[in-house]
Length: 179
Ligand code: URA
Image (cartoon, protein in one colour):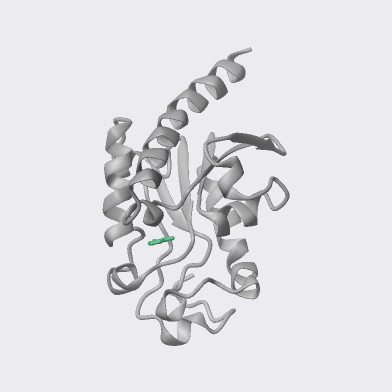
């Protein structure tokens, strides 16, 4: 990943942002792509949206070192534009490998780009946020991207409410695995 030149994003990026956290975790959070701060530091979700994510994790008694956080693209799209489908496609094998290694019980898709990559046919995030899906034996949850909560109070409330469903979903997955 560090030397990846499979798409042009590396040309303007300062650092790759592969992801970070506990590789033995149960929950993997997958966002869109690094922003300015992430690009500078080589770490995922360390800017304003990252602070919001930390707050939301804390609200369900989780710390970022207990989960794994990654993105669908590992280099910053210039000016924080949306990643292009061919960039997401080029980066996809890295994310697949990360999932294969971590084997999370639950993948939380943060925002429409992440959701669209994993579950392209479930519908719009505005309709399916807070819901859990199972595809090929892998559980997913659709959540709004934490950045939407930065400037919108009602979205913030919705996100906090949806976050509570993560723990419920995990308990259900564990119960199911026991039977
Ligand atoms: N937004 C994302 O989707 N990912 C990051 O790492 C930071 C902001």
